[in-house]
Every structure is written in C-alpha cells, then in structure tokens.
Amino acid sequence: MSEENDQQWFETSLGKYLHEYEQRYFDQAVANIFGYNAAQIGLPKFDFLRTNRMPLKFGAGTCTGVVLRARPDFLPIESSSMDLVLLPHVLEFNENPHQILREVHRILRPEGHIIISGFNPLSLWGTRCHFEKNQKDFPWRGNFIALPRLKDWLKLLDFEMKEGRLSCYTPPFGQEKWRKRFNFMEAAGDRWWPISGGVYFLQAVKHMHGMHIIKPGWKNALAGKKRMAAATQGCNENEPKESDKQSCLEKKNKSNE
Image 1 (tube, one colour):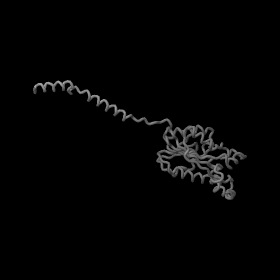
Image 2 (cartoon, one colour):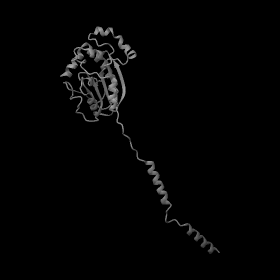
Image 3 (cartoon, helix red, strand yellow):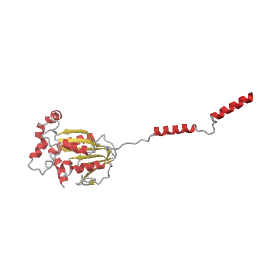
Image 4 (cartoon, one colour):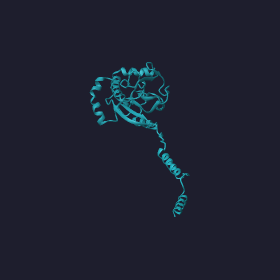
C-alpha cells in the first residue's frame, strides 16, 4: 500500500510541479526508441510510455492499476525479452537497488535501453530530505542515490551511458507562490549549477561484451584447392615422357636415311 500512498503525493502542489517536468522529459526520451516490448516499473498512475510506439507496453509494480503485479527486484519476465525499461523513482525507495538493476539487465535484450529518474542528494531537495522532520512521507523518506554512484553501478553491469539531464532547480517549497518567486533558478540552473538539480534523468544501453563473429577462411580454402589441382595436372600418366619423344625422333631420322 505504500506505493499507492506515494502516488497520492503527486496530487500536491509540489508533486504536480515535479510530474510536469518528468512527463515532459519521458515524452521526449522514449519517442524515438524502437523495438517490440517496453515496461514501466513504478508509478503506474502516470503513463511515461505514452509517446513510445512499441506494440507491447505495460506497467509493473506492487499496487493496483498495473498490468503486472510484481516486486521490482524479482520480475517474472523472460530474460532478454525487453527493449525498453523505465524506472521512475524506484531505486531510492527500495531496500535493494542493486538487485533491481540486475533484474533489469537480465530482462533487457542486447542494445536495450534503461531510463532512470531519481532525486539528487546534492541539491536543495536533498538538503530538505536531510532536515525534514517527518521523514515517513514521500519523497523525504527515500534513500537518495548520488548520480556518480548510480553511474558506477551501471558500468559494473556493462551499461553504456547515453544521455543524462538534471531539472527542478527551484527549492522544493510546498506553496506555489514561493516557487514562483524562485522560478528564475530554473533558467539559470543548467548554466550556473548544473549538478544541483533536484531530479536527474539517466539513459543507458545494455551491451554484451565478449561476442565475436567467426568467419570461415574462404580465401585459404580456395587457395589450397588450386594448388592441389595444379599438382594433379602435372601427374598425367597419358602424357608421353620426354625420353619416349626423343626415341621416336631418332627412329624417324633413320628411316629417312
């Protein structure tokens, strides 16, 4: 039930502000990723796959309203079957984020994509999380994961980083009027403090190392056959020997005399 309660936070003023930025990013990021199967794990209330054109798209999670009810760290999905997996704010609210990433790596096809969104601890959002009195509420009860740390986890699983972005530079005020007063920080964030966005997005691709295509040695095989054919032609038993030719010429000369 905690996941359902977490989604209710997005009905607040601050939650709507965050969802607006996240929906905008996912709409742009997933639009040009092609394949057959895509899954969104977590926050099923929001359709972050709506602009993607894959034939099979579904949501997975532990609350009602999902197509597949499952724990994100043990997914009942066939290995190497997914082309795209979204993890919107899943890792920082799970006790074993490493296992979730391993599961996503397992179900992704080679060259499959993973897109993660998370709260940045090195931001004003992270500062509020540290000093928040009521840390049982979403999102302040989460274990925010630093972006460099997350990148290291993905590299260990042979993911290649493709794209990253930070947003939500405005302080996480609960009231909209206060956020409007600090709205100038959004425009200046990417330029003046690019590592301090409240939320980060990270896109990576699964690679399989150690796979090499072994081609047959057609040139060597053909060259060997040519040499054998030439040797056979040189051993023709029907061809007269040189000594026999010389003997015939001598007999012919004697008869002419």
